[in-house]
Image (tube, rainbow, N blue to C red; front, side, top):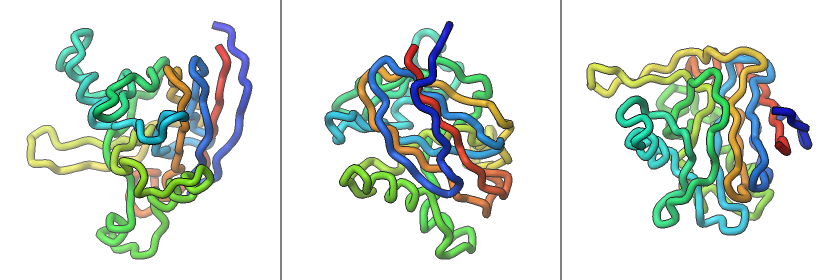
Length: 210
């Protein structure tokens, strides 16, 4: 498919940014340098109360007849109850490593003996402020952590393993917007755990007209 990139920019390491993606446009979140996680939140651009819910999206994908019980990986990103609408569709996902769950927070950094360390909560707060919102206005724990190489112990004891990302420079995940959305992205500032291979990098964004 021939595509024309209408917008391309780089979000610096350890920062956040919010921007609109119009219905029908493609959004690519790209590894600018490699081994870097991007936390993704989406809101209906015309009704900020309608927000993406990661766990709900993963659950619906898991139970979808096309791949019943095969994986817990979001193919469509749904908005939270009571809206329950498809906000974006994953159209290309070469790497496939993503974690549907919480982002790093102040308390998480405290637990990791890094008090005062910047977290994704800080990045999201900065990005949302440009649109007159605060973190408390959104369902903040529910994030798609793109490129995160996180797994839960299959033996069922609940252990969470954070490994360095497998993604390298140029890898990406691509979405098609099924409605006008406000994308809010945190370039994860965690260099304490292995989440970003202990070295934070930038993330590139492309918004494409198909």
